[in-house]
Image (cartoon, rainbow, N blue to C red):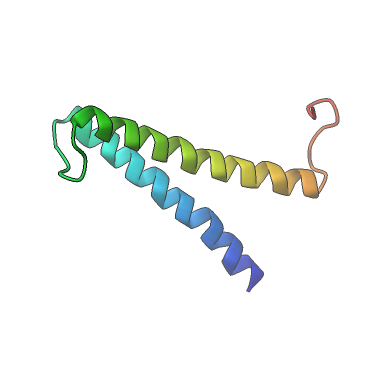
Length: 77
């Protein structure tokens, strides 16, 4: 059960990142999403979603590695 919850914790931010990439790609190809007021806002929202999703996944992995003491001592700050 715990592994399923952990997989969902990584799957949902992955979907958010994928949607962010889609928004940025749509902006570059001039496909306007009517939710956003301006195409620049659409790109910024996509960038924020992409960075937030990747940061969550990276933070999850770093937290897990530090908890299991898999980090090198010289790389820790």
